[in-house]
Length: 84
Image (tube, rainbow, N blue to C red; front, side, top):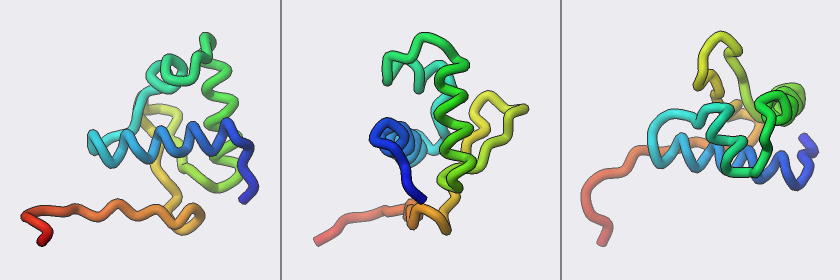
């Protein structure tokens, strides 16, 4: 999977948001973060990430972005307690 620099940044933002909040960002949040004014511009990046296998989208949901864990090797693990 060969991603452009911008696609890697967007994928990293989606991953980070899922880890921090437990759910993915909206198209609008991605647009605000990267200065993309048009929702269609964000959707083009998301479609490219989906074509390349980095994410799985459900277009019927506002937060319908899931990570394709096999493709990008990303697996968030829950943590708890203290690490000594």
